[in-house]
Image (cartoon, rainbow, N blue to C red):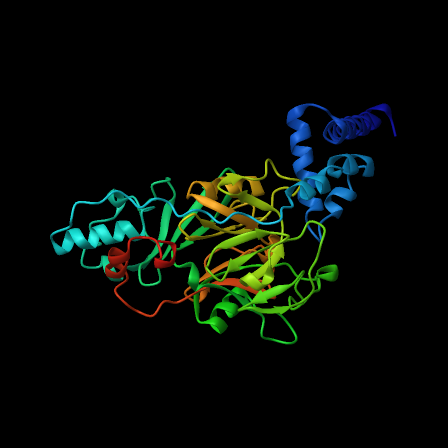
Length: 403
């Protein structure tokens, strides 16, 4: 082979060597750089990978163990600092100032609707929704309707006192359901022996119209059947499973329908509860910051406002082009827009899903299109049909127990 034949080969080798050198330099920069922007995304990458059960190799296979350990060294300390004995019960908010008495049927219908769903910006309701429909309004996929916090309203369900919003931000999308009657929110416990149930199946078994996943489950090598919960399960006052310590805390409803969280709660005072972590909103204030060592993931959160409305949030994730997921801190920000008093993070990842009216309305990251099998779910039972708006107008927006 003459020099002319060897020259193109040498150029290819030089290009390959240069490319390898660039890749090595970029790797070293990502793995070890102290530049704040790079360190931030390296930390999120490590936390996201290490926060999963089956994808930790995405960190361990590419980054030195010393870098991973340095990133994760303070995570357990954060969880220990998050432990509390019990969240406070909120004082009911003061009643709204007296409204001018509604005289016409239209005025009464609009007044009652705004009393039930003060989150809805009435100016964005389409003209196609007449006042006659308001007392029985049940619509999905609404267009152009927004909350006063600026989120799109996806569904209004007056008979069941449920409002569902689409929430979105940088890199994430999801659904926030607001259930006004906390007495209707219960924990559905798996009734099968060989496997758990999807959120949709939990809703069907409980006669519920809405549901989200709740506690985690034992999942060795990603082959768990979703029927063995992590921690105890308290459903309708019946206790099962085994309590966990460490970072796990109790979250659930007492017999007065207050949502409580903490590790020292008296179980005799609770009707429905599970264990998970961390508490992200406590006594009306944000209780975590940043990614809290948990990275960016699909998320499920449950909480409650001071007037006992239940907030149920599911963020989609691990879907490029749709939603990658979010941090627990961003979940807290979403709930605080709606007056959250206390909230606990639930199991996330491929378990995160929300069902409404018999079908999943979020996009699971699980390979099972119907969602993963789960040991339990928070569900909202349907309310027997009545003129909800007339009852709300008689009592005001809060339940009689809280007055």
